[in-house]
Length: 127
Image 1 (cartoon, rainbow, N blue to C red):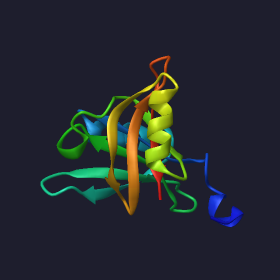
Image 2: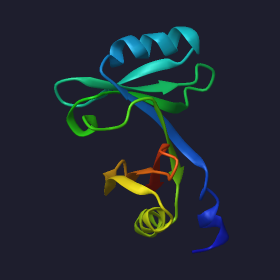
Image 3: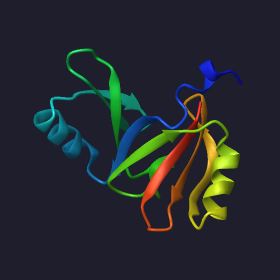
């Protein structure tokens, strides 16, 4: 892969949170931060993409703790962009961390959720 293809490796590519009361938390961050929420259809409910008001760029998500997000850790979860999701997941375990969720498909790529040796969680995302 060329250096141009690696330009986003290590970048925080997304943040979101999974909560029981996504509608309330959506409104909280819209009022406090100024995010503009947009519903993301999840079938029988909606999660929310939160956009910057000046540009409309989606920068965060607020998700219900149900469906595919039922077992996600609470609080804000950052997604680091990685080159190879499988290699990064293996490196996590080899370096004293653990996989909370094994790599799986998400939004045109693959992701997993890891826990570092200190107990902090993060997601890894390979576009």
